[in-house]
Image 1 (cartoon, each protein chain N blue to C red):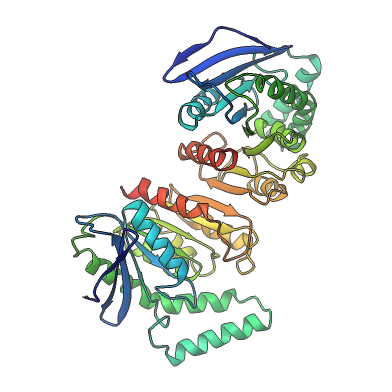
Image 2: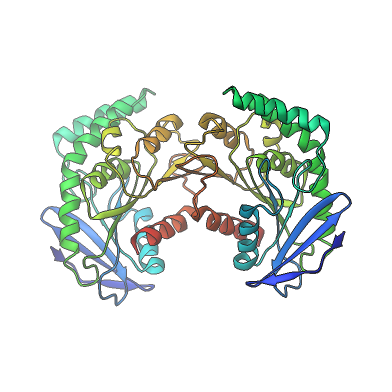
Length: 243
Length: 243
């Protein structure tokens, strides 16, 4: 794992890194030493590791929660090369959206394609980050909405070091089997008027999670309109289950 | 409004009162002076103003939130006389439950019968309590689950002094019209495995609320099994909207 020099502002230190082909960013409280919970943040489809929502959330997790937070570019996103196969899959998705079709099948295909690569990548990044003094062998959490949820459900199902997750903005299509393996506490966010995820499908994914400690927060508004107080809910949720 | 002498413990002062035929209890932070938010707490069916859940919640609202909190016996509950008409209605409900029938019609009949009396009673109690120095003309909130929600929806719809409400554990039967008049922020609690309220009916009542600032929290478990962290959520919700 190679790092660029750290920069600090408003009490948070930010460091870009690469692990093999994977570019990422780590945020920690300024001058942090010793183990602390690490929150992995999975970005949405078409976004990247430094999308404004990712950065704002990571900085709050570090500044207010005292956590470490990390984001990586998902395969075929951000700085990473896009293969022809991925281009074919996204072209099919875009054509379906333009035609006003139900694209849940296209989305599930894309998510399954990405998850096969993303899950082992996240696990390798988690192992490498835990070598750092300011992260250490503390518990890990995962935060991901929409595509970040699609990659997060199989990750959380597979990775015993992740002890709690905030997921949402996605339906059960293609995820039910992995959801049934998720047993850690989950805060699931659903937008009541989601223009991309049918309400019943989102409720079905929440229902499919095996976690005894799952909780659903639903709010009015469209896909990208999660209200601000939910960031505080996520902070308290991680604090309750990881510290 | 007549009061019995106050008693204080753990930083909270408790005073029983009667307003006409209505017996109630007021909780305030010990030695409180000056206006503060007042949370009206509506108990569940068959319960009363000093049911353990009501008392525990009221004391936390006072001790942690600095709020005043009040509960009254609903008509035909607690210390209050039960009429023959109410006995007939509850006998029908009990017979339906014993026979394993869908009792939502019986419940809606009972709730409509009670609400006609409970709504003006709560409004009179609110007016009287606001005369007290430790309550004053601050904003009011309402907390009520199950029957407390059935009486709360028409109350919040009718009473402009109530600025936020925590409601839940009830379906839309007989309440849709009043729910469509509720425009203040609502935190709605739903138990995912509720053995009394069908999930779709609970979601339909949340859907029917007109509030732009509504939010749904759903948790695994049966009708009476709201998890402990939701009391903290309610406290923060009232603090956000009433202070």
